[in-house]
Length: 231
Image (cartoon, one colour):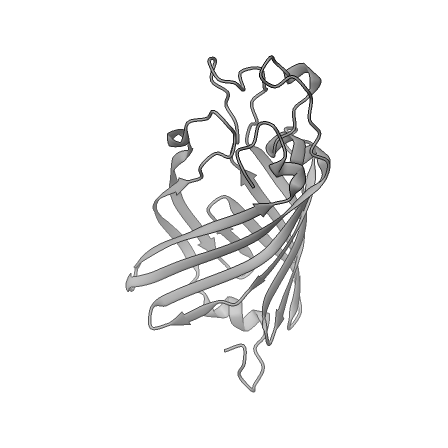
């Protein structure tokens, strides 16, 4: 539809979505990247909740509200919950580290619709007093839908300031050091390259199954941390 000669607008895209609430059940598997942590703790059952309206969208742990919308560019307010990343076990190498708790992030984004896809740029900050940091995120998406099959491939990059990076991606303060982790480590500001694919299929008019994955490649500041497994 983006390539149609009559010209597709963002309002056309919004109007193509069914409106209202969507309810279901789901599961998230996010293997921890911290050393000496149990992967089974990263299997998280979640309610699958979504709402599509003309201006308000809710999809799982992310929400957005369209402040202003032109034919091809819109300004949105965005919010997101980030899951906790670390709950050290008492007998773990990381027992001296503080928990990396979940946080609520909020900010602004710009969505742009072009003939080569959909671009999303946003800047958000921690508003819950956990990391105290912020990030900038850029993604390019080319959605596809035909005969009940939905595919949403996306590639992009995320930049984290030093506060958020140290909190979630491998920072170790002097107070958190121990015999096995003898020195503090500062990640600095870092970035990651991300690729994701969401796929869904409409089984019936009111039933849909959906799933997806995200792969992130961290920069040296994260991957060189003494408490991180790999990049």
